[in-house]
Every structure is written in structure tokens, then in C-alpha cells.
Length: 105
Image (cartoon, rainbow, N blue to C red; front, side, top):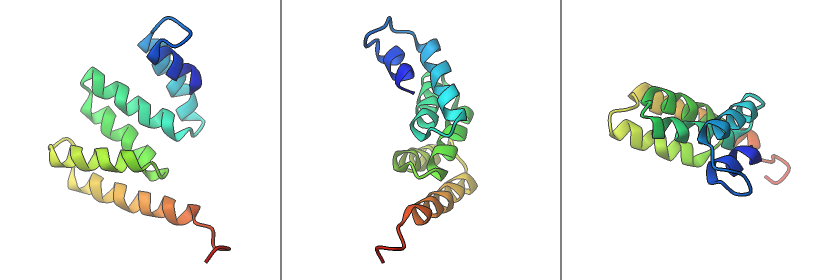
């Protein structure tokens, strides 16, 4: 993930979005939520709304709040379906519930 960020920003290495995307893909396949979110952002820049929604659906279900907000905007703009938006809300809520510590309650 960090190498993806470095290549995307050009910090310490020559800026290279293709390499950044590859590092994000590797990390996303290992369950890294920010990498999955960033893949959605990369696809947004390429004009691939179906891929954007796919990546943000996954990261939202992993508890990433900004992904939920972006899917909401995508739904409002006609890029995501009502079913996808409902799926995101349910998945996000499940992730939040799973992360709660029952010892604190």
C-alpha cells in the first residue's frame, strides 16, 4: 500500500500511476481496505464507473466510511443502483457492528 501511495504522489520515486495501481491491487487482494478504496479512485480517474462502484462496495463492506459516502454520491448521480446503495449500507453496518468491543458495553 505505501509503495502505491509513493508512486501515486511521486514522493521519493518517480510518479507512476500504473505502478501505484499495481501496488494497490496487491495490497487490496490481501484485504487492505485503503488500497481497495484507492483502486476505486484510480478507476474514477480512468472513467470506469462500474469498477469504481465495485471497489467502493468492497471497501465499504470492510468498514470504510468514505466509500459509503462516495457510493451515496454515485447513487445520487445515477452511477450506482438503489440495490447497491442498500447493500453498502447493510455491509457497512455489519462491519461496524463486528468491530465494536462487546467488553465496553
